[in-house]
Length: 318
Image 1 (spheres, rainbow, N blue to C red):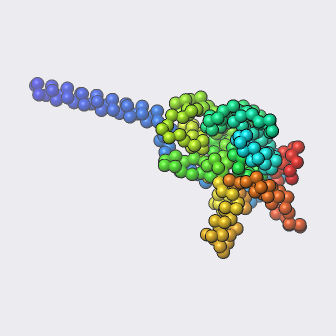
Image 2: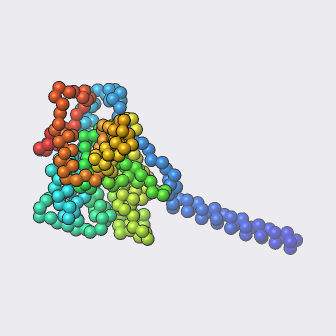
Image 3: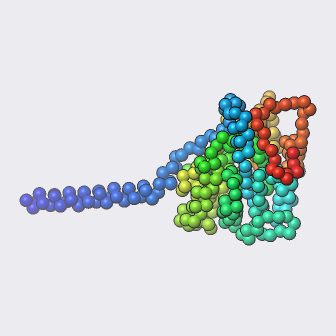
């Protein structure tokens, strides 16, 4: 009997331990839910094809083109004043609202002074400010002053996308298990994605302002970590042919690389016709891009586009 009782007690103890382990694992699984998504592979968000647009009426196209409006968040510092001035004078005029956020005040150019030296903390403050001052704008484009953007192509990419869905777009990259959108090529957030991001900013455990890791993450990786906790993942923006629309390199670099790798078809190997961004641009390159994108026209040539995006009212660019 003693032997049977001992076996019974032993079984009870082992059963209890098993239940405790299951309980702990269940709690751990619930608490780390965001990290269960480690194996999420970014989607390839493509621009609408001509066939898709043809299914829409003229009134629908006009309504969509008027609804898609972009708030540009441009991060600057006084030490790169010439880049700041060039971005202000060129592509940013095509944003429906462009706001420059600076690390410290400058008498030369207008910007929101965040009085913050830390890059990540400054970006957080800028995004919170954009969210609180967006009005009815529901798409947000984050850029550095060395990035050149073609806002009309960005609007075309998100034309039939719903900003109430959590879109986080750009040039998607991977670092270990973390998928993120490269800051150098510009980052796009829908209203819902930014709303979730601002919400997680309030949770220091999930999204610390100053960071607690041994090695400090770059701003784009920090952004991805915080968004991941809210179920928002990096998506790669592409044209209908699967070509990337967000470039971290300048046009010069892309063409040079294509000449080496695709000498028989340099243009095709370089970049998409509907490219949205080019990174690492000098002020001179930006001015040349403005001429090529917005002013140079082959006389008599008609692209037969189904819709058009007008520059914001008051803009002195074409």
